[in-house]
Image 1: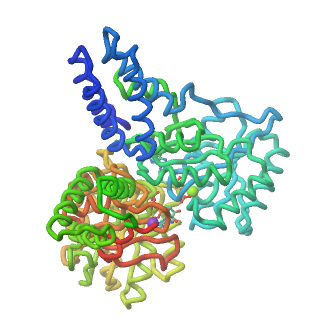
Image 2 (image 1 turned 180 degrees about the vertical axis):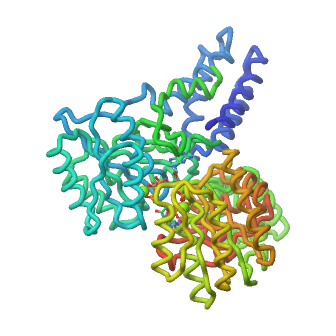
Length: 297
Length: 277
Ligand SMILES: Nc1nc2c(ncn2[C@@H]2O[C@H](COP(=O)(O)OP(=O)(O)OP(=O)(O)O)[C@@H](O)[C@H]2O)c(=O)[nH]1
Ligand SMILES: Nc1nc2c(ncn2[C@@H]2O[C@H](COP(=O)(O)OP(=O)(O)OP(=O)(O)O)[C@@H](O)[C@H]2O)c(=O)[nH]1
Ligand SMILES: [K+]
Ligand SMILES: [Mg+2]
Ligand SMILES: [Mg+2]
């Protein structure tokens, strides 16, 4: 399971605290050092960790905690609260355009899982009673259009393609028109993977955003990412003002810290997690449940 | 390295650079300890003189001499393996292109029969660079593709056969067993061929890459790694941990999506890259 090693380490740290009864400032310091190491080991971004630990520590050293009868319990409660906040607090859901037709645009670095997740989303939407259509806007990667067609077939969802065009903006516009005309109510736009520092390709996404007005722009983040996750997430968010994050490849032993960092630096919620290569391997993300699971509560 | 003097703040900053480039915690500690010794032994007082020592320490961890180079024996079978989306198929295209430019004959085996249009992706690359691709239908047994490709490569006297495999997370037991089976087919059908088994590591990956190296090495006896996506902002520091911990040579670096975007590994440059903006 993802987050497993983080979970083990944090729980280990708290066990030591619980056995102490009365806590001194030194005990809290040591515990926070352990929490810091555990988070870094879990690929949470360096700066995010520093801030997190400083916040937790400040709260822990408050009088109510140190003087309480069960200080260790209080510390764990604080960490749980902060961890839930870090993961996104209440949690959030995919939103639909109240006008009745929703465009969802996928974006992200190369190979994070956008095309596969398009299929998963289509599947999810159908189960939620929507009528989705897919749109192939990756005109660069060899066989990207073929890939989305195979995906579409697997989830019984039509795919708009234009193999002659090299212009994703034009393709997306035409797809939207056709989808509306044919009575679909969601269009999922697959886009090519790109680096957030690729000026030309980032401008292309801005252009699609401008012309097609996606109601939801979803950043697909690979759960295996390390420290770089914040650079990518910041870059995409600054250019596109994303609406949410999908964290993929959570089925392995991903540490998952990267996605938390991506959430933190963008302030945008993690909506789903991908837990496999099949099209039903998509789960809603619940920050509170995930935090409790990590802390074994 | 622009500071006035070497103090704990500076050491903290260096540690931060190492950690944020994804070098593992243990390796970071090891590098920091060696650096402290280097500073003491050489009586270094100026921050600007630290950089060389630091780069040398990292070079020592990753420089594996001749093992950093791909075998130039023929016939050669290269298996490209790794987790999902790391860049295996694209790296095969780049490597095939490079070997062809060097005058070798190359063939591709599309043994990823699982991912949607994976075979088509490889075949399109093959067409672009003028390499034949042996391909079966989606869902076919990957070992059967390898078997056929070997027979065809033998018959045509091909120098290098490069086999694409489906991405798999190292925790998926049955998929790892499938990989073992593919390897057995190569050993059995082509014992005279030299072998390279390359793990494709995505530079954006964090500490999970350590377990990737460990688990893939256990089922497939890796001969080296290729680090992809170094054209982005990720430094790929985890490769330093892997080179050190598993005595694993890094062979190539991927620096883009085009067929020319493959560089031979250079320890000095890679170590220096960690400290570039
Ligand atoms: N294990 C696992 N694999 C996944 C998951 N999501 C996607 N993948 C795999 O990751 C690889 C890359 O997925 P794609 O959907 O092609 O990624 P992409 O972002 O569209 O890639 P580009 O278009 O090249 O940028 C494929 O092998 C997928 O099967 C997931 O949640 N778990
Ligand atoms: N920027 C950049 N992108 C790369 C590099 N290497 C591969 N890619 C991109 O990463 C994405 C995934 O590459 P693939 O070669 O399909 O990866 P794979 O490991 O074969 O993926 P699966 O077969 O799905 O597991 C594609 O969009 C590639 O163009 C690189 O060095 N730099
Ligand atoms: K880089
Ligand atoms: Mg794609
Ligand atoms: Mg592939």
